[in-house]
Image 1: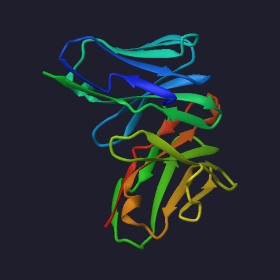
Image 2: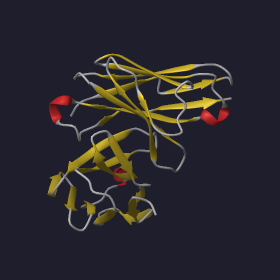
Image 3: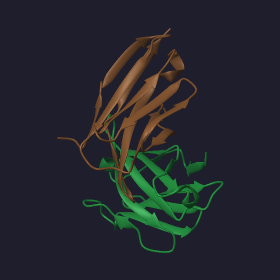
Image 4: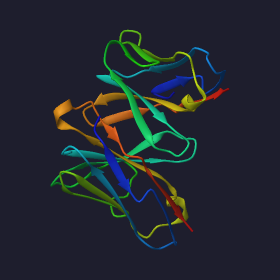
Length: 108
Length: 117
């Protein structure tokens, strides 16, 4: 069993739809990252959170430490949001454990 | 946020040659940098942790004599793939920790795509 699991693995949406990507983990963590990887490969850090909720523009990330679960929401999705979204948990000072990613495609 | 660059962004080399990849923190001093490898449609896998002025710590299964890491300054870490083989073809990504922002934060570079012929 993977220590970090994301769902769904693939997601397609129409422009404007509300999108939710989920991340569940089985290890104790100090923080969780949501990352965005575009087709070219470069990774952008979207959020790092250890409790509660964070919002940046159309993106919202939540985490429930007790339930070992985090969600990334995208409101009013746009084709430029098409990317792979990766959840990564921080379980020691030097270690990130990555999920396998959710491939999102938003069609106009 | 902090900026991390990598050079080159892509490289093609012949089997048996060595390739050096640079990772730079552009606007902060990174005491710790990390090197990851990502195969197609797979997660990033940590290869090694690089601390300025000391030897890198390699993850289990990563050959330290094949993947040479040097972190000679607070803004530069290099990964050298020695005697490259086609199975080393992958996407190599570095990240850097900004010590001003706590130990949980990592900023990622844009990655280097290595193709070994």
